[in-house]
Structure formats: structure tokens, C-alpha cells
Length: 556
Image 1 (tube, rainbow, N blue to C red):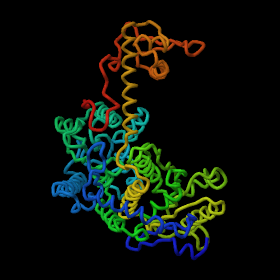
Image 2: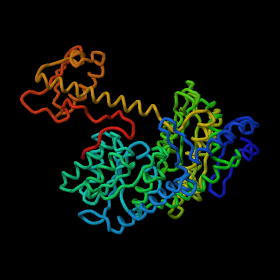
Image 3: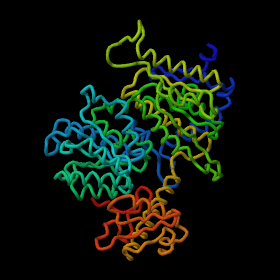
């Protein structure tokens, strides 16, 4: 790579402590100039978005996560006041928890359990991992997460908390309260508190939408507090709302610095000059690297252990925003960029072998952090530290990939701090929005997610019908095919088989299997002479398939 090329395509942003090196993308010299007309339209679309334009026609709502760090730019005084009031309330609540003015039966809360899924978990997890200082004694609370409806996973987390449940504060995050994974985590946590003889409402806090099922539950049961989620903030861009600020503040992280970093990035990335705007340059890099149609995957390699979750965070932000079947004109385009990654230099002992010598269907984003550690410099060889080796592995891997015509982008931060993490979050939120404009899609809706939820609801309804049929004929064996026919759904035999296998594998389900050969002749029977478990009711279950904001009210 020539020095002149590097000078022309490595962009420095001293006010942010950030640089962006595009020199390892061999785009032609006139590429950036050729993109300027497209970016003029993208900048205009972004400006309209920030002024309150309807960006999500599916839900007829604005998209205003940018206002979270610049409330004065919100289109109404009501929104401005709501943002500033919420941020103040979060700071005050966290301070009272830390002082012990808000506490549990054993005194100060020392443990924090966050229950959410998707953006309501990934953002808080990223920030907790990246900025936490528990092992140095500087975190105010130890943080745990329930971010799925896997019973075994929930048991592991609750076991980790163990006898400290009396000192545990629980934050439940769901815009509607109808998100099944979060609802189930809430119910499981509540059951654990009950089993420990504790009154769980004295430990629970809600982050939810106004008038939601979760808000009704929190008010009716007298939870400690509730904080708002607004319909103009999507889950994957919610980290700098109460979703992420409340857990971070409780952990003891400087959320004001995160907001300042995001605001500083927004200020620069509002510039309508391509070379002066790091978000626009990254969007242009993605466009060139993927042929503007997702032709290559994005491999994210942060050379910083604390950023190990950043690839997962970007995976949701990028793939949920850009993975769309239709463009804005309703044409089938099947857009998207697949994202995966872990961390360097660990990946040099894993899949970098394929990146260098296997199928060339990707580009890499290297993330470099110049400041190695907070503790004093320690040498492992004469004049050389572990951090020097880490940088050596990054630069060496980048060169090794370039030798094989494998392309990369390098993003360099001066240090990892609350301010710079806020910058990263804001930077990539803007990149996604600009790239979506370049390829003509809507980054702010997710019809595929809702389709999956509805399909899940159909599975639960089928399960209830199957168990009800077994209950109506206690002890009578049915094959999966016969039982599907019995409930009037013969075309669902495969799904019935999968559901029955799961039930039979779990003691206490009330479903017993008798294995046969061939396997599809195996039979399933309901219990005889004892009560069927409560779930086996023929009543319709909570709708796992409804979109956020719909569904049945959770009963704790």
C-alpha cells in the first residue's frame, strides 16, 4: 500500500479522537467524487428524518434516536422535555440506589438483573462489558442479563445471583410488555423472588411504553419505578434512551459522557461534505465493498477484549436495518449485509485462516484502540508490551489479508471510554441510515421480525391443541400424524412431531413417548389418573406472534 494512497484515504477527526482508514479498499480514485450526487440525496433524507419526518410508514411514526443526545433539536417542546426529564430522573434514581435510599430488605442493592431481548439487551450488554470495572471495585452494581426464553440459561443466571437475590434490583425492558421472551424472563425472575420469600415488586423497575401492559402491571403491583420508551425510538437504536442509560447509570458508568460523545459525533456526521463526514465515508465504503447489494459479508474484528460484543451489537443494528426484501418503490431487491466477528487476536487462531485463503466473500472492519490499559505500562520483552504485540497482530493480519486481495477498513480510537463508546454507537447508527438511503430501502421497519413472532405464536397454539387432544383421551397413544389429523390439522404433522418430541423430553409435561421403528410410528400419550399441568389447557395462550405493542397482558 503506497504512502500517497494512505495519505489520501486515511481520514482524521481530531475532535473525536478518531480516524478512518479506507486505504485497503482499492476503489478507483474518482469513486468518492462519483458518489457525491447519491450522498446529496442521502444527506437531505437524513436532515428530514431529524426534523421529525415520518420515517416508518408501517407504523406511521417518526425516528428520533438522534434527539436523545440533542433534545433541543426535537420537533416539539413536549419531546424535548420528555427526554431531558427522563435523563434527570435516571440520574436521580441511580443516585438514590447507590446511596441506599432505594434498597431491598437486606439494605443496598448490589446486584442488577436486566431483562430484555434484542436491542433491549444487546446495547446494555455491550456497554456493561465495554465500560464495566467490577474487578477493580469501581462498579456500583454487578450486572446480569436474562435475554432469552431458554429455561436453562435463566437458571444459570439466577444461580449466579444465588443468595444475593435480596440485594438484587431488576430492570424489565419491553416497549409493549407483550414481548414473550421478556415476559417469560420477568415471570421466571418473579417466581425466583417468591421462592426466596421476597416481595418482587419491591425489587422491580420497568422501562416501557406509555399505556403498555408492562406499565399497567408495574403501576398495579407497585413496582419501584417505571421509565419511558418512546415509539420514535426503535429497539436497535435505543441504547442512549432509558433502555441503556438506566442499567449503565446503575452500574456506575458515566452516561453523561456517553451522550456527549454521541452528540459530538452527530455534529460531525451531519456535515453534507462526504470527506468531512466519517459516517458517510463508511457508508460509501460499505457500498463499494458490497457492490451496493450485500455481495460481501462484513467481518468485525475489534482488537480490544472489552469490545467483544460489538460485532453482535452491529449484527442486529446492520442486519435488522438493512435486511429488506423490498425497496422504497416496492421492488424486490433482497438487500442486506451479513455481519459476524469476535475479537483480535483470538480470531487469528480461528477463522482468519479462511479469511486469507478461503472464499473471498467478505470485507473486514478492524477496530484499533491506541490506549492499551489504565494500569502502568508493563513490558513482556525488552521495550515491548502485550499491547504492542496486540497492535502488531492487527497490522500484520491486515497486511496478510491485503496480500491476498482481501479488503478491509480500519477504525482507530484514541481510547475506550464512555465518550468514545457513545461516539461508536452514534457513528454506526448514522452509517446505517445513510447506507439505506444509498440503496433505496427503509432502515426503520422490520417486517421479517414480526413474521417470525407470528409464526412462533402459531406453534404455541398448535401445542395447546395437541395437549388438549391428549387430555381428552388419557392414556390413548397417537402418532404425530394421527394426532395432527385428530385436531384437524393434518398438514401440520411435521410441526406436531417436533412439538411432541419437545414435550416428551421434559419431565412434568404430561406427555409420554413410546419409541417405535420406524421413528415416525412412535406414539405419544397423555397422563392417566393425575392432573394435567396448567399449560395443557385448551385455552388460547399468550400470543407470541403479535408485534410489539400488542398481545395479552402479562400476569406475574
